[in-house]
Image (cartoon, rainbow, N blue to C red):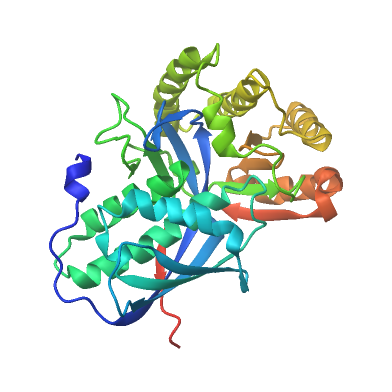
Length: 364
């Protein structure tokens, strides 16, 4: 597939109005992508668990303009309140996708979104948010092109989501999604995320993720800025090569179900991501003191038990605690006894591997 495959066909008559709602999840990368080139293309491939409970619910209501023009017309509401701060990001998104869904200039949109988790706190809120909006737009296009095949519908939804936020393309499908061309991953592409269809050991089907909310505030350095700092980074090329190699290793681990190797690779990837931040110019640190205390506690717990619990980190201070479902009781007790004290307001979110985006019917 190329970008030309996503250029919109000629539409029939445009409906005068309508409304559509999608719920799409966040995701947590196991092999991280850090660094991109225009337009929103990854410098290295990545793979993520699609989450379930951490999601964005977005309703797009659309009304045909009385007079057609070349401008974008929309209002955005977040958590029930008009949010002007998000408008520049959506404006830029519409600019990027207008050739692929040209009807965005024909309507006034009211976009209403809410998260099941704190915004901009290292739980990839842009991933779930932009994928939810993209799937709403795809539902509108599906109404205009009713013969659209399901596979193309989701592929283009992932393609559009990527143009809003890179990692958003991994939130359309589940359980594991690869984004970025990789020689050993069938049909993998820089343009969109693809479900990981190789053999997966059953232990990973219902893997658990408890997100320890160390800091619910806005990040000091945005992911967008962080990605840009990879340009000219002294270790960038080696890092891109390492990620590609680690995805090959993880492919074998997912098949074998070797959790010890899974733990080692996933934790190394998380720390490498933050090492790239700390060696950027200018350098920055998104981890907090309590992040490091939690990591130490995890290592000590694993050394004292037979547990295969491990951590990963996104671009923020929060810690994703990954563990197989058969350890749920013991790990949840460990969290309660030893980790919650390091979380803001003792807050954690229990999540698990999920199946991707879902269209919602809110008419009832």
